[in-house]
Amino acid sequence: MAKKTTESREKPERSNASGFYIYIGPNIKKHIQTGTVYRGTRAHALKQAAAAIEAYPLVKTLIVSGDALPEARIKVKTPGNVLYANYQKLAGKEGK
Image (cartoon, rainbow, N blue to C red):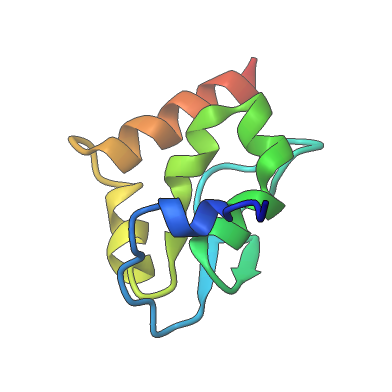
């Protein structure tokens, strides 16, 4: 019996013409650095960052598509939205 891939069960991805995803959160020593670029699909990016996501689940929310990057970079610096809140939570954990 053939095993189904997880990609077939996931929601279809929005188009990402840029072809890459990038981590826009704070540096987390021994796990992930700001600006880490992942080529390909979101699923591939999350797989590559799995160790960081396991240690710090909020990392997943700060991996954005190249198409969304300009807006997301502004949001992580602007209070009152989820990207900002998650960035601050991660930055606080690393600062301790």
